[in-house]
Image: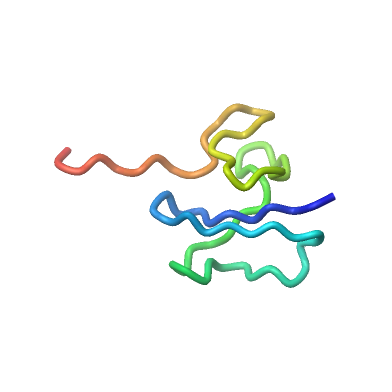
Length: 70
């Protein structure tokens, strides 16, 4: 099994795939936000780097970017 870590920031595209959770930084090396390896809503592990929605619960993984001017 491989683990996918993605940055929790909606403004950052950092991601990494590894065979274990060990050795992967807890915080993003690009922006400093926390990295995620599972859905924050249902805790299903990520399997794809391009994950936007959870395949189990269907919720957004990252918060939606705020719309400017509102």
